[in-house]
Amino acid sequence: MMLSIWWSVLASLGEGGQDFDQEAHIQESAQLLSSYLQVDTRAEKELDGARFLGEHLAAAGIPYEIDEYAPGRANLMAKLPGDGSGGGPVCLLSHIDTVDWEPELWEGGPGPLSGAIEEGYIWGRGALDMKGMGIVELQAFTALKRSKATLSRDVWLLAVADEEDGNGGAKRLVERWDELGCAYVLNEGGMGVQDLLFEGQTVYPISVGEKGVLWVRLVAHGEPGHGSTPVVERESPEHLIRALNKVRAHNEAQEPEWHPAMIELLNNVGQQRKGVEKLVLTKPAKTVLKGQLMDNPVIRASMTTTWHVTGLEGARAPNVVPGTSSAVLDIRLSPTTTADMALAELAALIDDDAVEIQVLSREEAAVSEWQEDPFYAALSRHIQADRPEVVVGPAISPGFTDSIYLRHVGARAYGLVPFDVSQEELAGFHGPKERVSVENLDRGVRWLIGVLEETCTLP
Ligand SMILES: [Zn+2]
Image (cartoon, rainbow, N blue to C red; front, top):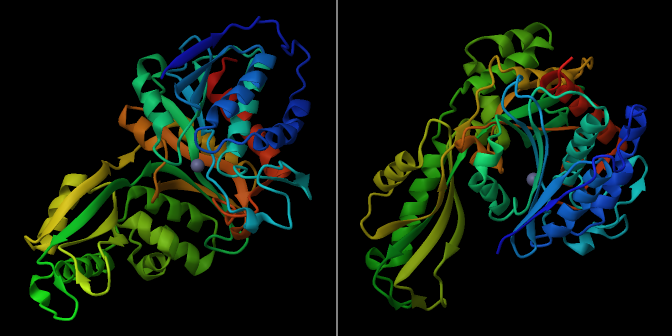
C-alpha cells in the first residue's frame, strides 16, 4: 500500500522572519521532545510520529511528504534546497519507531509514554533510541530554515519507520534513492560514554562502519529413535552438538583485527592521557593492549567476526529422538569478511554432511571513508568543542542500523548521537527508565546547528 501526500504549505506560514531567536528556539526542544515521546510510535504506529514531526515542519513553513508505504508505517521526508555548490545532499536521519517495554519495570517513576520533564531529564521510551536525536535533527533543520541562511547544498530531514524490526523504512528510502542521493547521512550510532576507558574521560565513537550480518540455521539430520536406547552416532542432536562445539571454539579462537578506525580512536584517547598510558595508546603497534581490549565484549565484537549460537530448536519430548535438530547462529562479519567467505569457513569447520546450513539473512559489512572528510571532521570538532574531557574517534559498530543500507547505495553515513551519558543512563537503551537530560538535548541542537552552518551554508 502506498500513499504519498505532498503538503503544500504557504511559505509565510509561521515563518520566523528576521528576528529569529536561536537561543529561544533551542530552549523549546525539551518541550518538543516531551510531546514526541507522548506519541506512541511502536511498530506500525509510526504514521502518528510522522504526522507529529510534519506539523512542526509546517509551522516553520517547510513542505514535507509523508510516505505511508505500509499500513501505519510511514516515512517523513522534507528538503531544504541548496544551490549545490557545496556538494551532494546532507541527510539527517532518525527512526520514528521505538521498541516495546515491560510496564512493571517502569513502575515508581515516569511512564514510557509520559514525556515527563523531571529533575532535568525528559523521560520516556525513545528518549535515547532515538526520538531525542530526531528532535535534535528537527530543531537544527527548522533553525536552518528560520535563520534564512543560503544553503550550498540540499539538506534533507528523513524520519523513517521500522528500524527495530525489518529496516523497512530505510529500504523504502533506497527504493527512492534517485530523489534523495544523499552524499552524507547523519544517523544514530555512538554516544559520549562517560568513564568508558578512563575515569573522567568521555569517549564519542563516531560510527563510520557497521559489521555485516549472517544469520543461519544449522539443521542436523539423523535417525529418529527412542530416548531409552542411545545410538548417538546416528542421532541428529549429537551431530548438532558437535557442530556447535566447533562453532563455539572457533569464536573463542578469533584474533583481533586492527582496523584503522580502532587504531585512530585509541590514538585519540591516548593523546589526552599522560605518561605510560599515552605511550602505549599512541604507539603504532598496539598488541600490548590486546588482552585488555579483548576482555571487553563490545570492543571484542568490534574487532572480530563473532560466531554466536543464539538458539536451539527441535526437542519434542525427553523420550523422543527427533529426526532433525537445529540451532540458529548470529554471525557478525568484520569488514574484511564477506558472507560467502564466512559460509565457506563454517562449512569447512563443521565438516559433516549430516548438518545442513540454511541462510536466513545476510548483509555485507559497510564502512564509509572518514579520513580527511570535511563533514566527518565537522561532526568531530563540534562535538569535542572546547571540552577537554571529550575524546572523539571513528569506530566500527558491532550492531547494524539503517545506515548499512544507505552506505550500500553510496552515502557516507556517520552514526553519532550528541549525548554525554553515564553507564546508568545507557541502561535505558531498550531498557527501563529511558531518559535524556535537557542539557544534552540543548547542547545537541546547538552542535548540529553549528555543523550544518559550517558544512551546508554560504557565507
Ligand atoms: Zn535506534
